Length: 239
Image (cartoon, rainbow, N blue to C red; front, side, top):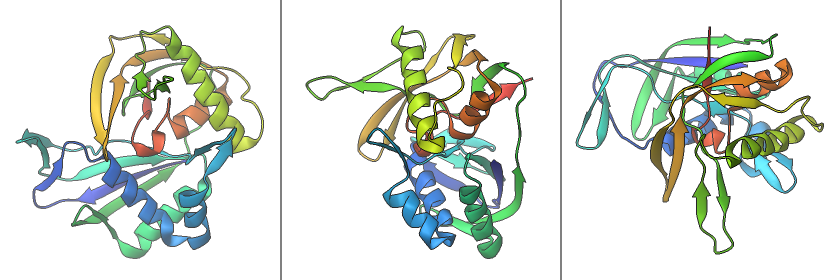
């Protein structure tokens, strides 16, 4: 299920370039309209093999902006999209936004202008996709370092499908019906973002994706790669 949040903005909204963590925190607060579900989301999540997943992804803020002094300044209306395979999560956030009509990002209260809730479904097994939020994949070395992988690395497909397997089994208790076959369709663009005290390397790119429709649907709603609930891995379908 998908939810687009349109924000009324009549003054300049000044944010740091790395605002992913604060936007994620705003999503968690919005999910708090259902106390039991909010506790599950914060403390447990969906688990598989010792890993815990939050099962949502979100896009960067969209709107007219300029960049000055390492800050991003939005000077008009803004929107962003939130997706999840969990209807409970989307409904909890929609309910909170209907009730309050606003939410807080950093110290700024943002007024909600409109909500669009929809449930896009997929029937085909082949699509051209393009990242809205960059994909991040990493492995830890024996000495504790993080190694990040580009779509041009041979390990990329294996790690994408390992992540898919873990998320899917956590969500549904069964294996995905296929792997996701990604063929790079553009030159990757590297992006380095700070999440709290951690620098994360990620990549924007376009791909030709082949997978069973149920897997396409799941990845569309959860995102590709890791750290989806921190603002990574959301993609759009190119018609």
